[in-house]
Amino acid sequence: MSKWVDICNLDEILPNMGRCALFEDQQVAIFRVIKAGKELLYAINNYCPFSEANVLSRGIIGSLADKVVIASPIYKQHFDLTNGLCVEDESVSLKTYEVRLEGNTVQLAG
Image 1: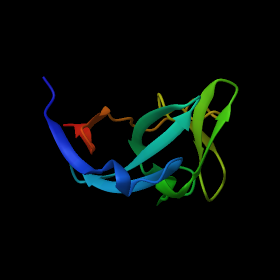
Image 2: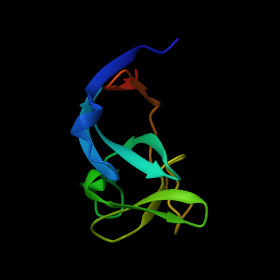
Image 3: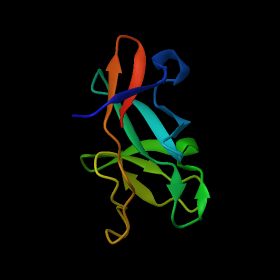
């Protein structure tokens, strides 16, 4: 059974933007995505293995085919927000986190 940890209020993440948070001693990028009128939350590791920097929360949200992706702000690799796989190189993946909205509070599973 997961223990849910409060991270921030939903209002602290602008629509179609990301926010970085410290969770279990790791930087996590949390994204609030509006797609087809639905609001979705995603959470992945903030560390980009290509640039070796914690920058993914500042990336550009978009879509490739049917995938919701984040483009790294430095070298522009795309990561699938649902599973963390790099679209250009599927041998590279990021850790994803279980995320939910409880009232107006964004929570991650610990």
